[in-house]
Image (cartoon, rainbow, N blue to C red; front, side):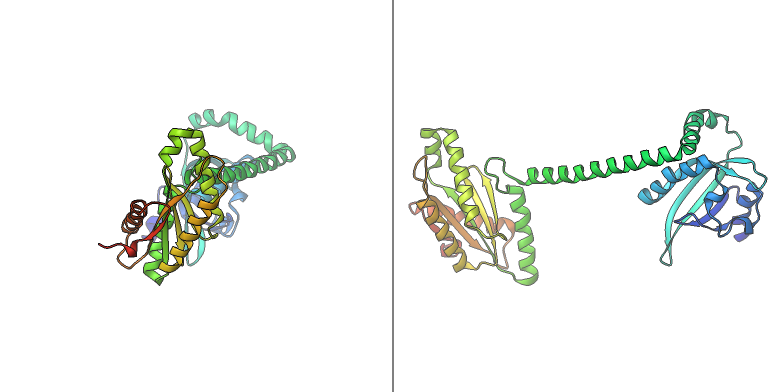
Length: 326
């Protein structure tokens, strides 16, 4: 097998991630008219032309680090007699015993006229760029700065997009999608560590009447003020979200039944006593506390039933799901 490897119809070189050649088969050595001592522990750039060194730095290294492989890279290698040997290079990165290595296969391109025609302009520009290396380095540095600036802009943009994807545009609260993700995480934490968690569903009383009599703009202002009161009355670890329409949800990690009832009652009172510019506003609240048998659907259903009981009981009140009869 080793004999077949050394006599393979293509050159084979293993080098470090820094370009230091560690082994080479006989085909590669014969292709370039070198002995093993001429290449082993030597840098790959020692057998590259000036233009190809630049090309190697701007194409091979970035691609092998980013993708782990490079396919059909066209290069000229310097032979032992000083001739240009045109090859196609395929490389693949791997790790062995904790050391990062790159296997490279070199195919001799004897019929290279078509390739030279396609690359002539590029090679000429690269050779000119290498001669004016100070200008090229300055340009590359400028490109790196621009790339870093664009990367930072992209990070900011991604953050803005993430906020838009998880935020209710009217109230500025988190949206239903974000709440569902946090609820799922709380249920998983409860299953793992029995960490308590409760939630409230808050619904504005007679909100349709507000829209019908005062208009939708007034209704929107009421929703925004409600959102502000709920956010101000919640802890930093709580999740306050708009569930839909005039309905809001508050996820309260760490609160047991009595604690969430006290929280909800305090919130209900703060809303009732708030200085409303449009009209008097009250809310009905349904609460529920996680149990071992709950899923994201069942805990919401329980809180929703408690909300319905608050509505049916005269509105402007708090009901916990544990108070309901099955």
